[in-house]
Image (cartoon, rainbow, N blue to C red):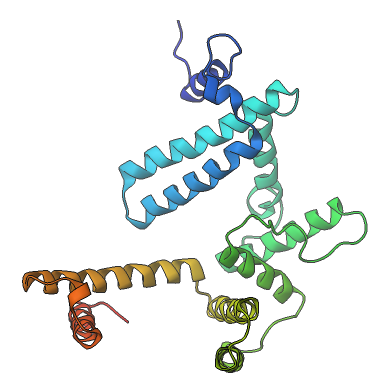
Length: 271
């Protein structure tokens, strides 16, 4: 028997799992809607493996993510819709279409020029698909994480000129939003008003990150990591004294926090 390509073996395994006879009961019960949360989870696990520079884990997580695509393809195939080959063909066609400087007659581009051209092509494709009532914001998935969606909405608006001239001017807007939430806190405003004002602050922060060409998700992940390292330092130092954070004063923990910052800075860290 000739060797079977791994992707063909995976497709066959997926078909067996979904088979009415002899398949897996859990896999047979799944739908596009029930699988979607797993797809999102797997994508985050891919990002986590990359963040930790763990190539072995990355290989496994990419396999899990590929399995999600195979799962969708099998369910669609059972309904008489697209299959895995159709998915692969569609993305291949799209990549060729969006890279005319590689596969066509367009001149070579820098990475920055390619990003601009890519967005232009996507905008044209959206316009061709839309039949009236087109908004520049159409197609930004509502299921995206809120921070990612905010970034995409802002980028879309910026493409038609709805944008700040300079990043530093956004700091004025951030100060304005901070004053507004301070007022709401002072007057003990209802929770939904505080939530609105908090949302405005977060939205402005994403806008500032975008203008500085900083990925806000990555920046927040780094901040999370920094907080975790420093708080663990507090716990370690207190444990060495036979104590726990619950028994320490805020001033004591703040002193240990500042010590952790000093250690990071002396070791080349920041913040």
